[in-house]
Length: 519
Image (cartoon, rainbow, N blue to C red; front, top):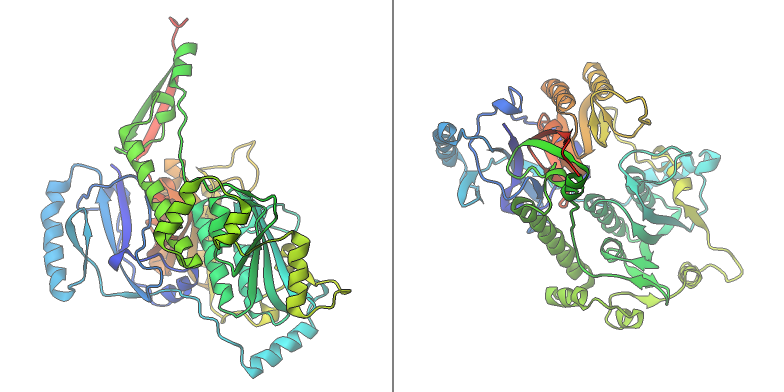
């Protein structure tokens, strides 16, 4: 039996900002989940596909009303239908608010959740004085020259895990934290972003973009330099005040595609017969082995995902550049981009090399030509503590448990640390948080395609026990599919990015047989 739990908002508004989680935790109202997924007694609604992207019709909604609804792909619709209709009829007397799900009215609660909209508050005189004193006693690696520019090179993979000083690659939490610190740091005058080829999901791109927009509320400048630009890179760059590119820049805004590979034909030729059993109409895992072409359901699902990403991209670029939606569609459909025309049409600010942009920033900040502009690297600025800038919260602490990668029950002999979610290790962390009096609430940060069903169920149980004693919020990053979503169901509240891939509810198993009569 496969079921999907969805959190819906009135008017299908955009998902909660990550900073709203603390406010949510302060007034939790958990919905009851008394038993595992297979025993949830909710009415069935048909889904367009297992992988769903949160949709948004208003990206600036001040508040959101959430309610928990469940979708069951089993055949128990007739049994639970009457009970669901009675509940909707009863709730309708108390709350007239409703949303449509496949032409059916679904009531939603009156509980108002905070939007999480970032509000920049200028520090007062006392706080400014305290921060200056802390900077005087700051550690040597925390010291930054006044009037400095924070530089960050966004390129390649972006992990949802924290990175140590010896680790390579970028860390999403540290990138976002740097934006927040730079907004309040009186020593930082602005941010200079180098945006190159990115290899991460759209939810991470969206979160970084939101922090760029939040940083701009501080009144400081932020400019982007894009030598190589595709859809993800431009989606980030257009959130900045200015976009610069060299004369030889590569702009490849050709639209969005998706593809799938199938090896059934190869397996037939070498005498291997794959046998796959699945539960769930849209469960596409295993298609690569048993099919030669894409199934109708998989095509429907991938088309829906592409439409959502494309629509969000066009809307956000249109809003950022102040252009009509039709102009953005025409722009991306041209296919061939000359750098001069991009400047003339207003898609970029100017054509300049990196050294020319730095010279422009020197003039803007009043730095003499014979002086060097003070640039602070991303890694160095990660060492600046929030305490130094007066950004620490109160005494109550919230535990943040990160779950990234494929799910396995125990660590394999060849697996490296941090390569995935190991069930027994994550369970130990959850238990320590539950037993500790130090933590008042917990956030489960999920970025996982799923994996071992047993491990997912065991982690679900531990999260459920934690949620019975403390408020728990499940926060979804790029991906929270299959077992990754199963884990999230045990939390009191589930939040996701607008472009988070979530769902893929179902079960799949299989094996391969060697045929003796093969050629």
